[in-house]
Structure formats: structure tokens, C-alpha cells
Length: 350
Image (cartoon, rainbow, N blue to C red; front, top):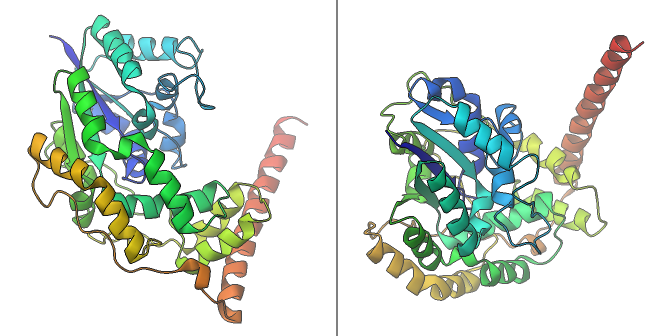
């Protein structure tokens, strides 16, 4: 019987980190259902709960254009041989790959990789989790402030993002994938799944697993979004070119255990005028996607309207003190961890 490889194309800010962490931490449970989340790429990072790009991370990087700074050749030691070995040694009927980096791969790269899978006697199925444009772009902006030291105003940065990101033309991009894979593309609504707190269970059903019983589902957020005041503070800090992980230290401290059913986006950096601009820009793509892929008319939820102008936020003394205190506490904990690690190394290597 021909085996199947399910490739999760993790569109940015659409639950990819949560899914990849779940897959890594529940690999043994998935194997019990004849699904193998291949232990390659950034599998270990996901298993430890760190922000990463899934087990398909390195493989997806080989599919990027050669002028992309993240590109790695297929022959790289962490790509071709580990992938082929993992496929050959796996005894399961269904294999699973996941990475948000897949969404940046051009059409010709997909054709080449799908051809490789066919030569390995693998039947490919592509799964894309898709989110409404405005909430995705707002969350992406916060992520860029948090992890990539962006200091530009939201409107300027978001206009740059939505105009250059080919994958955001959902219909064009997914139609290309459908043609390359003989129609084997499934599209999941992130908006509807997240509103029900059911992204993981919805994905399990795609894998043919009817229940999450027996699986471990973490209830703490992995990739935390800061509050508006924190984003404004981090944006200000970014003008001084801090280390990239500075913002993660700060943002992590406000996180609370996620509550099932709670919508993931409660505020937005996108003003009403920009929201209308974005929706007009993608209107035709959305309608064609719904029609050609036979999706429900409410596949995309209305974007968040709770706009916060982070450039106009004012900080009172107590708010600023709270932000700084959280950072100092987190920094103290990190120093203690490093100190303990140093002590252990000295014991192991006197």
C-alpha cells in the first residue's frame, strides 16, 4: 500500500507553533494512530516548547529561492539524508511534516519536492490553515516588533507586508498548490477553529484521529503576543537596536494559561481605514477561494475592530514600573538558569 505524507503549510500567525509543539510532544501518541511526525528539522525545539519552525523547517528552507538569506541547498547535511532516512525507517502508513516556511516556497520548488515524494512512493496531501488577512497582519506586526526589532509605524510596516507577501493571495497560491498536487489540498479555517478552541482537534480529524483523548495538550501559550503598552514599549526599545531576544524575555511574563474557546486576537494595530484598504485589496482573492474550493461563506471571521493606536499610548509611572519589573524578574531568572548551567558544567568537567 502506498504511504501518505501530509504536509502542513503553516501560514504565519495561524497557530503553527501550537500545532508543531503538540506534534512534537505527542509523537508517541501519534505513532499509536499510525501517524509519524518525523523527528527531523526543529523537532527537538518543538518538543521542549521553544518557538521554532517545525520538523519541516530545514526542508522548507531548501525550497526557498537561492537569493533568500534563509535558503539551504537540498544536499545540506540537515536536509536530504535525514529526510530520506526518516521516511525509510518509519513503519507508519501516514507521515507528517509541518513548517510555516513552506508558505514562502515558489511554485517550481513545490513541483520539484512533490516529484521527489512521488519517486519515494509517497502520496502527498497538503493542508493549509488560513486566517483572515487583517488579524494575521496585525499579529505579524506585533511579532516583528517582538522578535525582529521593527520600529516602524504599524500602517507603514503592514502596507509593506501585505503588498509583498505572495502567499496572502490565498486563491492564487493555493490554486497553484492544488494544480501541482492533483487537487490534494485541504484548507482549514483558523478563525473558526480558534474561536472554538479546537485547532488541534480539527487537525487531528484531518489525520483520521477522531478524538484528542490520550494526547497531552499544553494550556500555556507558546508564542505569546504582548499587550498594547508592551508593544509600544518594545517598539520604542527597538529604536536602540536591542538583542532580538530582549523582547521575548519581556513579552513572556504577561502570558496567562490559554482559556479554551477564547479568541486569540482581542486587539489590533490596524486602524479602520487601513482595515478597509486591506479587505478591498484581497476581496477578489477571498471570493474566488471560497467559490473554487467550495468553502463556507463564513470561512473567514470578521477582523478584530478593537483598534489601539500604539503610537499614541501614554505610560503612567505604575504601568512603566510594571513592565520594567517583569523584565527584571525574567532577566534574574535567566541569569540564575545560566549560573546553574555553568555550575553543572564545572562539576562535569572539573
